[in-house]
Amino acid sequence: MSLLNKLGITAIGAVAAVALAGIAAAEEPREGGTLIAANEAELGELDPHITCATSSARWVMNHIAEPLVQQDMTDEGSIPPPLIPGLAQSWDVSEDGKVYTFHLQQGVKFHDGTDFTADDVVYNVYRQFDQTTVGRENAPHFYEAAAAAAGWRWDIAGLDFVEAVDDHTVNFHLSHPFNPFLRMFTQTDCGPMGIISPESVEKYGNDGVQANMIGTGPFKFIERVPGDYMVLERFDDYWKEEWRALVDRLVILVMPDVAARQAALRAGEAHIVIAPDPDSLPKLVEEGFVISKGTMPHIWTVSFNEHEAAFADERVRLAVHHAIDREGMANQLLDGTALPGESWLSRTSEAFKEEDRWHAYDPAKARALLEEAGALGTKIVFATSTSGSGQMQPAKMAEWIQRNLIDAGFDAEIQLMEWNAYIAKFFEGFDPEWSLVQMSWGWTAAYWLDMFLNPGNQPDGMMDVGVGDAITAAHQMTDPAAANEAYHAIAEQVKASGWFMPIVNDTAPIVLSPCVRDYPHVSDWQTGFVARTWLGDC
Image 1 (cartoon, rainbow, N blue to C red):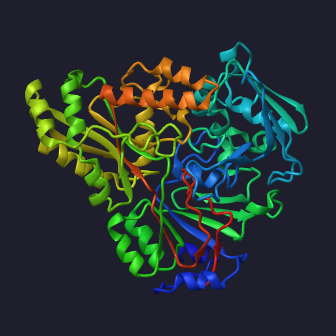
Image 2: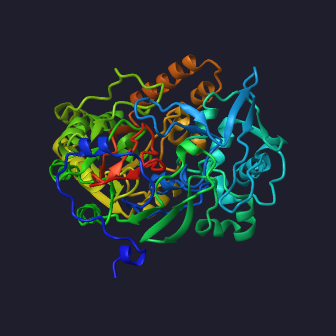
Image 3: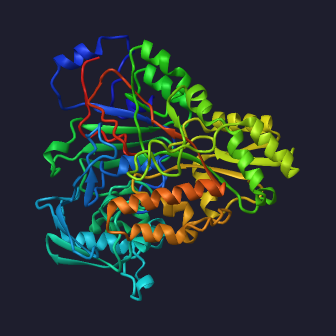
């Protein structure tokens, strides 16, 4: 019996080329049906306070668990998406930038029927926030794993304490100004601030949250079979009418193999394919499928292992930069579904400048630098995953980089690992055999720079390039324009150091069945927000 049959879902049916614009224009949004998405990786951690993978967070955040402040996930034209009220209907900031007062939405209910109040915000924060860092005891429900994922965020924000003023007002007290504070709530990766029901934590325990996620979002969690699928259903008591889900159910299929994802689409067993094969896109369009893509915070990066002896010579590091054809990878290998990486800042960051350019592809210069350093034939081991959230086509991309490095005079090999095992090993500290280590990440909020550049947050193997104090100073500027200039200067210093390299920026192509209507592709990782997506005729 197929998965769809087990779930009681009728296959969508084969797709023929259709006049999509005419169909869409003739239809009105309708409710009902099951929307099926083929995900590119295992869902991993689902607890919104500990997840660090976009493949999980895109379905948990905003769909199940919501933050106080949201980005407008229906605005496809703005970069970055504008901030809008979430579980907080409004907010005030003190003149010194140290106190944020959030006025909460009223009449909001969790999926378990309990009311959402300011005490729930305090509970969620103190589940994540290690209060011993500010000289106080932790709350009884403090969860060390949540602090490991999100503690760095509260630390750099300078959180001192949070208090419920009344049932619908909560104050966050900071020890210093932190200008990315509001957008920080909207970011979907690594300990995102999605609010979950305190009663669910007390009832099921921290380990039980994974299988009993209870939030306030437009969908409620029903079932998950690891390695297979997850089922969400529309929450009929959802508080925000304009984001109320239109489909009855949302099913996420776990399909790490891109050929399997696309076969499911063609067989009528999926409506949405995440991370398609770029080579297949023209054919899919001919067959009547729809491609959605756009600018997003993604940066597919390479970091240099500081313990690699050859990299002590700056010329060897710069040879790597000049050896890799970023533009060719974006336009040829990835068939225009990515842009060449030009900064350690996301293209969606307000600190990014359109004129930014990284070290140019120049294989002759790369070989000359190696010859000058006496390093021709230097062994390079490039580590990456077989698939994963934001990874696009990592094995093919690794092979492209390997060829580039060999052409420039390196002896290059590749090491591949499964995504969740790889990301765990990445943060535990680089394998001594790894010379170059890949990761796909990036945020709209410029506090992204803290992730790999601030010494306190770096896994072993990453080089401290001396920008930690500058990042902290930029965070604490109260003038946003001055802060953006400071962030940009930091990114330029990272470029000059040669220890980090952006390769490409994914435009996150997603393939849609022609049945799918109103799928928003906004400039954020949350490209899969489908609360207002509906199923029409096809």
